Length: 583
Image (cartoon, rainbow, N blue to C red; front, side):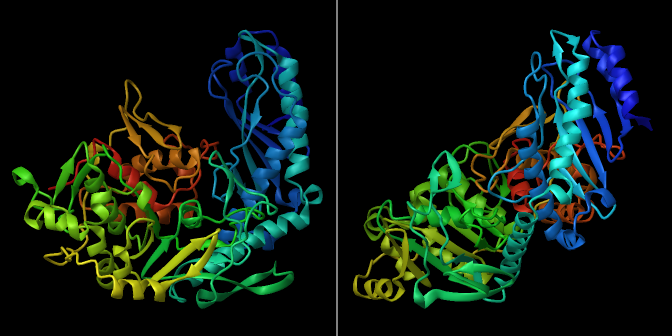
């Protein structure tokens, strides 16, 4: 292994030469208290930045073992350290030095959610940060002295500030890890308590704006408080402050299994609650306001998606007898309507293990949700192929164990099928279940239930491996996350704008590569969608996310990935227009 002096000598030798000479830097370098790995050197100043890793021995970092004693705490600690590195970069890096990405130092840092990422690895032996670095140039001429300042001064200073326990804010680190640990402890208790979610008293659900996921200030926001009839207490392993006292149990709103309706006037917080629940499938950073909004990991947000593709999904429980005899038991289309897309999304989610559906009438197809008595009288059932969701929602729970949380502001027909009705008033929840049931008895809707047969069992679909082709041009694998909402996959673009629980572009990137990995390793003509995504989850649990890089060899920077859920991987797979399912 070369030394840091060797690195300085190489930089002095190539100073002023053409940019390609930077390739001489690739390799490992021993510093006095760390090791630098230069894994990939960019081809020019405007190309994707170079990839480096900085590894600090455990005996030097001295991170307390209890902070990474199990997988959940390790992920939390890694996320905390990523944020520390990001903060250190902002204080240490001198910024642009030349053209293009010259002078850039970056790490893949997240937002309000805590996600497992390839950007940081903590083991008992060492801690390693994976960084992007823009090697400096003027035109295509190497700026060797500036590169030396970055690699030999700034990178070690970033490490000193962020990866050594003696220089980290230790109390904040413990608070961060313990907070995530508490959230995962609550999540593990939900099923046994008969809940699909929990919202702690005092939670701050509103955000600054629609363009920011940061919390509204406590001076402007209304803290959430559970209605007394639905307040539960949940034990946690680490004490937190609630109502001005330290406690090992949190009180709050336990969202019960079954059918829960959230009603209320406009702008009173219905959709804000649902948004918090859909994001509650991930742990959140302390002081987010929603750090103790915890949702079962098997909850899926469902919406209508006009124009999406559907491949051989049995939607006959919701839609059948289409004009011209179109088959709905194995329904396929390249251009779904709002109702067919929503039906397919529900059944695809249940197929891979979803146990809770989250829906908002604002993003649902009206004709899929309900047909009132007047419309039933005008358009007879024999001319209406849709069995509305209102007539299936109880059956989904009672026969298939799938709960629903539904925001509804304009249709009281759901009062007949709801177990729990919550009215949001001035951002506060009121339990109005008894009142809603009384209204349902007194004001009969006179609509007829339109189910004619039980909802069929969940389809088990087997993808054709050859239909998942990520190649483009002379590249065997060409996959790119264009945004959180779009994945370039070979010649196709997967539109995942309707997959609303993807929260980070590195997650979306991971989804694209996960589809390829599943096709490469698990899909052999016998494995169904559910088994494939479960195998991916087990692989990530055992080996981390580095294997998502199809060219990964040994210990190299694999690129920036954040872990997605199996449910989002399956959702993206189902939206790939080339997907084919075995007959």
